[in-house]
Image 1: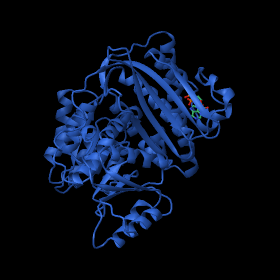
Image 2 (image 1 turned 180 degrees about the horizontal axis):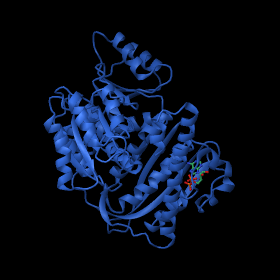
Image 3 (image 1 turned 30 degrees about the vertical axis):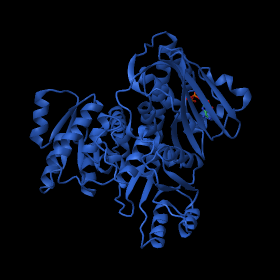
Image 4 (image 1 turned 90 degrees about the horizontal axis):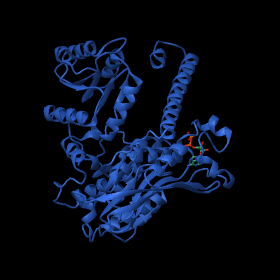
Length: 498
Ligand code: ADP
């Protein structure tokens, strides 16, 4: 409702008040969720699931969730997985993710400069396939004074009371996280240097399960033999991450910390075959660096790959490929592999999601989400993020029409019941204006009743997803859109799309 109020033509001061109501409401919701969770744990009411899941995927979900936040604060967000960590373990992915989300969220919150790195290691326990898996979330933030460290894991405690005012939060997150780690057979502790950063560490015990398939990049120990890669990134952690993976694939790596150093190197006699260029760098940014490299190497063009954290979806012909940050091994591998003519694209490293991505260049899609309910908005946004889609979000049919008038969309996800103007009416009006373009419109509706479906189709919608939205349903809807709108969805070559 606050969101609706904001758009009723009120003045700036009033908008400011409404914004406060909104963020306070959100903060309150966060606290209520924490309190409920904590009481559930205290009451001994948490039941952990025991199902196989992919550890890397769990961690990469978290990276995706915080990608925007990290970019906004210009922080490097990285995950490093040691060799020997079982790819698939049996446990509760939701609870593990919750703990990692909480720690990474804190790390980003309390860090103004530098990086947040998730490291994962493991040691076998006995011979029965059981492992102790260690997660460390290290940041370069404000750190925690020695005398405060123990208290942090107590419920409702924060380092000092001014924290609440500056950063918000309930002081329950760490208490919940520690209890969850304990419930998963592990423990949680913190190491910190005041003023220089913290490392929140925890372990869990889990049974390893043989993986169905090994990602291609894991086996590719000599794939890029004789390839020299120039890495240009101003963050030391990112350079180390890139070097570690590239060397693991047999490449030779030259790492430079700025555009200036890179240009110096390229003007010299040493050769390289491809350059990986970070976009967000001080002084000379990635885009500008590309232009300057082009000028130096106009006769003998060097293939450039953009490490993109801003993902504005713009086509960038000066780059042979784009790899989105946070960095993930499979993205990086496919981008380079494609350049050097790798032929084994068909083995999708990560199964179903990858298959879908191959069908549709998701990150290049312009998607409009029309949904009035805050909770549903959140769910949809998070699910879409998992599919690599960053939609524009509007609250009702009228706003949807305004957004549609501004720019065309490839796909519109349209709630049926909305205040101001409902989805069917908005669709009818879009159809009246869309002069043959036939934007693909998918209805979102709470009840999967046939009459609703008919109403949606009658108004001109193309497809139907019922709420609560499930990732798999959303995925299928995108697949159907790709199959039916091929001519209009121009594939953009980006590493994520491959
Ligand atoms: P919340 O973040 O909701 O206040 P938490 O239990 O997650 O509650 O954290 C408790 C307190 O611990 C925070 O308020 C903050 O003072 C401190 N803290 C947690 N993580 C970090 C970190 N990475 N760096 C510095 N301080 C931290």
